[in-house]
Each structure stands twice: as C-alpha cells, then as structure tokens.
Image (cartoon, rainbow, N blue to C red; front, side):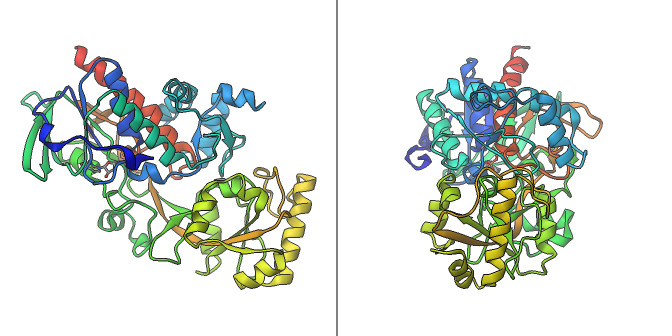
Length: 462
Ligand code: ADP
C-alpha cells in the first residue's frame, strides 16, 4: 500500500533539478517516471503529508479502447467509439484536440502500465460508456490506491526523489519568459529551486469552496469527495504567469456519495456497472442508473433532497471489492431478503420487492422497458444477502483548469506556449467538456502524465 512508501528526507532537497513535478497523484507520478526513464533528473513535490492526491480515491478503473485486455474478454472496441461516447457524455463541449490524443493513446497507456508490472486485466463499464472499456486489476481492488501504490514502487526502484510537506507557492520565469524554477515552503523554511521545466500535476479545486463558488455560486454548501489538498493551487500558480483558464464553471457533482457520517464517501460507479439499481424513498426505480453522472445527479436532485438508495446482492458485491471497505465502516445495510432490506432501510417493502422482481425480469429479457438501461445488466439481484447504501450527490471533479495543447504545453490567453510549463491531470481543463465519464480521469493522468514526461524531455533537448 501507499503508506509503506517513505518520502525522501527533506535534508537532501537540492537547489536544481532537470524537472520539477508538482503533485504526487497519478499524473505527477507518471510524468516523473516517464521523464526519469528518458534520462532526466526529476523531483516530485507534494504539499500534503499524504501521497497520492485524489487519485487514491478513484474507484472504478481506467478507460481505454482497442486493448489486448478487451480482446481477451471478446470486446472489439475502437478509438472512434471511445471518442464518440466521451464527446456525447461531455455535451460535445470537449476539447477535440485533447480528446483525440486521449482516445488514441489509451491502449498504449495500458501497455505502459503493464510494462511496469501494473496489470489491469479485468473490465467493467461506467455510466455513459457503450461497452466494457474500464480496465481494473484482477483483484477488483479500487483503481486509485492500487495505481498509486504500484507507481510508488516504480518511483522507489528508480530512486526518484519525492518530498512531502513541500508546497509550491510560485512559478518563476526568466527574462525570456521561460520557466526557471519554483518557490516553495518547507518545514525548514522557504526555498527557491531551479529547473528549466515544471509539470503542474496539482489536481483540481473540488475542496476549495471559495474558488468553487466564485465560478458556481449554486454549489455553495455541497459536500465534496475530494481530499483537503484539492484546492486548485496549480490553476492559480499558472494564472499568475499568464496561463489561460477554460471551463472553470464545469464542475461534476457525483451522483452516488454516502454522506451520512462526517465524511463523504464516493460509492464507485462499478457498483452500478456490475448490476446495482437505484431506488427512491418508496423503493421504486426512477432513472437509468448508468446514464451520465450529470443526468443521474439531476434525477436524484429531483427527488427533493431525500437522496436515493443503491440496492444490490451478494453476486454484485463479490464483483466490487470496495464494498468490503464501505461495509467495514458502516455504510452498508444488510438483510437476508429484499423485504427485510426494505424494512431495515425504511423503504416500502412491497414496492421494493416488486421493483427488484421487475428488474430481474428486465435483466433476463435484456430489455429495460421502464428506463432504457442497456448496460450493467450482466447479473440480476436475487442472491442474498441483499444490501443497500444511502447516497446523494456531492462535488466530485472539476472539469475546468489550465489550457494546454495535446503536447501538454500550457497556453496563454493568446494561445501562445509558456516555455517550460507543462500540465497534466485534473489541473487541466477542456478534455471532459461539461461532464466527465467515470474511468476517464485515471486514464487522463496516465496518458497525459506520460506525454508531459516525454515533451519535457524533448523541450530540454533544444
Ligand atoms: P491528478 O489526478 O491530476 O494526478 P491528484 O489530485 O491525484 O491529481 O494529485 C494532485 C496532488 O497535487 C495532490 O496530492 C495535491 O495535494 C498536490 N498539490 C496541490 N497543490 C500543490 C502545491 N501547491 N504544491 C505541492 N503539491 C500540491
């Protein structure tokens, strides 16, 4: 697990590196590894004590098309369909240059991970996708913790320095308006570190209420699934040296977040992908559970503030290891029959029983006449025990951020490149349009993290 990785001793922090990577989530770790394997000397700076950012919280998997893994599962997919699903899901507002690069380099990213002994050979499906292209480990462990701990093994093997509790406060430019380093705060005081290239991999701003409500006043008071360090620092750092921001008002509210305790726990889309349904307070279905996050959220909000309940059985639970964790911290209600589950959950027993029976028939017929669901219908709900989880929407992902081109170079308002500044991951805006599809954020961190590492190498050759 990520916890076993020991961050580098601050006393060894040097004054100069080839490349400074800001942030230790999927994007930062991947960029640093890629750059290091090209012969560069990178450093990873993480402001929190905990490594891994929001990446560690990702649960469903990593989307990719035309992979060998898919063929092994008899899924014939294409970059075009991956592109089309993502474009449709994003309200056709996705940056098409980024989307094209993203879809066409997804299979290579799965291969690159496999080359690093990070094997994602199981498949599931997320809302808005037309086929099984969400790759995950065969242990069915949540993707985020798995990816971060595996990437950290690589960081350790390659001896890439990674400092925690080091916060970047400013990006420095030379007279030619090229990146020349960063200013940081550490436990031993403030420092300036020099480097000709910086990769911003600082993640999003879902935990920054002030920034969120600046762009989306309507989101005031919403809970968030994000780690406390997701405060949009990278966006402000880049903006201070002239970077363009895009889509800042596009914020994803995730439909299925358990928030009855003092913490918000995202209940991964894989639960629905493997067959769970959603019911309202009376125990009836009300939506195609695997519609896009935006549409499922809207349907739950229309219930009037009660939230909704995920309903599933042992067969589905066995397919999603994360449920063990949800259960261990008391988020799951259990009963031997559907009627008892309704009673425990305070839903109408007769309604829930007929809802589940109707759903099982829809699965048998592979036809959901009521809500037109056509995916996540590989298994029904009849193998007890039965489970419910109460969920409601919460702020989950910020689609907006700094503008880049497909080379991950950060752009100004005039679409000029800021020399030496690269960005990857959630800090970037544009790829997801107005709605991110589940499984695309982990894919984004690996695909564009690799690209950033490669492009920094090329830049430093000049
Ligand atoms: P991504 O999924 O894009 O990789 P994550 O949220 O997983 O993004 O990771 C981003 C990381 O960057 C987080 O661990 C966060 O704490 C870190 N971070 C954010 N701002 C700074 C900063 N100013 N200095 C150093 N690290 C930062």
